[in-house]
Length: 268
Image 1 (cartoon, rainbow, N blue to C red):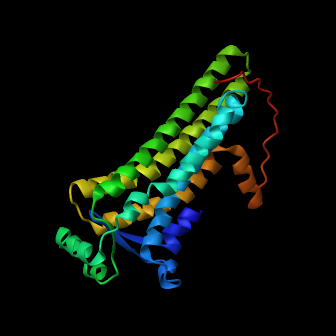
Image 2 (cartoon, rainbow, N blue to C red):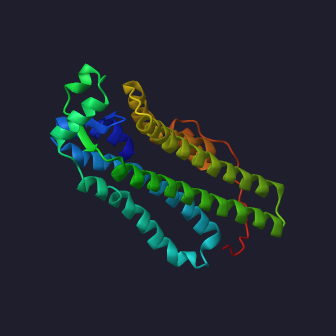
Image 3 (cartoon, rainbow, N blue to C red):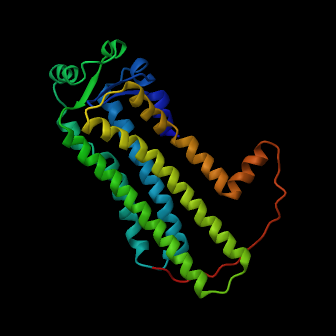
């Protein structure tokens, strides 16, 4: 939710690529006069904080189901702590090399001579003129979180498959397990679409020196939709969330309650 407010209310960034530049249209600029560099750091850190939180969801499900009595119970706290630490630390190289704005802005105008007039008149902030200081840490963070998500989803899938083979379970229990896995796959898909779609466009824009302000604006819109898309998939995929929402709108669920006992083997 904070990320959504960051994109739509607090910062409301207008991105200018292939240059790593832009300006704010949010209340942090117009109401509070917060310097643009702090707003940039806020939004980028929030993006990866959300990514770390999604990885934590997958990790926690794996831990609760299969790894409570394994070595992972000691490693998970430093693992998750490092994830959140790097959500902020990855910006250090770019923040330490912020260019002189007058020189950098002249370079942006040379790089993108067809900037729209309404964009030129705004206080454009150039975060970096050296792509390596922002792209290498950014892409590294993206690949790290994707890899971590895939690993935990794979662990959950493998352990649930082994559990199904080792124990005699009713058809209803197997069906519930499949629904659980499908919910995880749906959440992972939404996460990847919201994360990768903007990144692919930005990389395309930078590497091919392609400027399209409508495309830049669409990147922000897709990123801002993460909250509503994740919430929608949670309601669709998980029956308890769906029932609570139906009750809130006066449509009480009539589904019968069923208690299913599961014996979980010691995972890895």
